[in-house]
Amino acid sequence: MYLYSLKFHSKNELMAIIIKKVSSPKELKTFIRFNYELYKNNPYSVPDLYDDMLNTFSPQKNAAFEFCEADYFLAYKDNKVVGRVAAIINRRANETWNKKEVRFGWIDFTDDLEVSSALLKQVEEWGKERGMEAMVGPLGFTDMDAEGMLIEGYDQLSTMSTIYNYPYYPKHLEQLGFEKEADWVEFKLTVPDKLPDKFVRISEIILQKYKLKIKKIKRSEIKKGNYGQKIFDLINEAYAPLYGYSQMTQGQIDQYIKMYLPLIDLRMVSLVEDEAGNLVAAGISMPSLSRALQKAKGKMLPFGWWHLLKALFFKKADVLDLLLVGVKPEYQSKGVNALLFYDLVPVYQQMGFKYGESNPELEENKKVQAQWSAFEAVQHKRRRAYKKTFQD
Image (cartoon, rainbow, N blue to C red; front, side, top):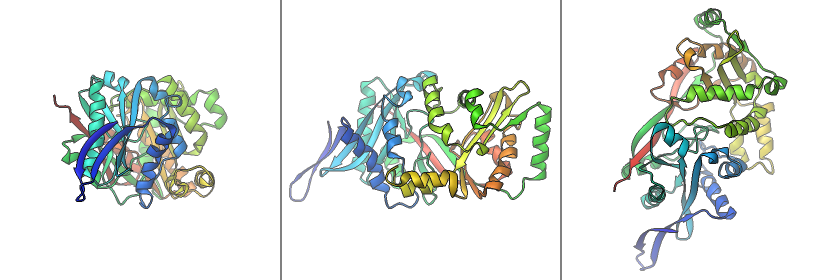
């Protein structure tokens, strides 16, 4: 247990902020549910599913523990939970980028600087004990987890794969000496009534010039053609140069194939192959689950499953989430991204979608941002990873 600070009430009652490591299933439940309680009346926050979080934080269920270690901490004040944080070391990322960094993730706190300071001080001490020289975050175990603290777009509905936080969060970090490490931007995309003629012509020229073909897969082909493996191998290759990325292990790939591919409507998946059948690009999207997750309140039971099922297969939202877009590096400057939306935009039109939500994109990644030329795109959110180097 870590005792951070002491002060006195006017009645001379001793107060303390106490940081306690999560060490029981009950405390882990408290850790997960704290976010739900802090944001339960917020119209923009989207809660995670409790069972998904249990799996994420479990070394037995999360394949990232092959190369990560982590502890989780709760902050108490007046015997009430007032904050939480995960301390994570991704050894694979540190080796890839030649760094000695501890990550802080799943950080939430009340608007009390002593609370946020105590939580982050605990992560610092935890990291120092393990030879780390700096701390960065919010980051998860890997890039497949939500990352980046929201610094713009507090009045925009969050998505199931991103973090929502109150405006006071970044103010606390800046007061505590944290500095910008990386920014991601997000876009709201209007689905056009018709693809621009120029966009169609360019797409057809690219198909012919590089002898490419658009592949729509059937459910029976995923396993037979090993498409799950091919997609995640492509993502590993395409994302390798991006900030903080660590290659997914086979265990992680197997986990994601099992978790996500059964839920995907294959109409909303576009693959591009070369003439030899090699995968060179992939785009995966799905109906937004944001409103359904809000209605579920983080629980599958008693009726959370119905809200999610309805959003996925019956009464879809008019917003879609662009989950993954990956292009083989040697094709990234050849306009191949356009082919994904040459295929997908007519699908979005037929399915009645009006808008799309991009995933966070590094602000300097202009190649990715250029792919939205088929849409009217408005940057409506920005999020940041912060860094603090430890002092001797």
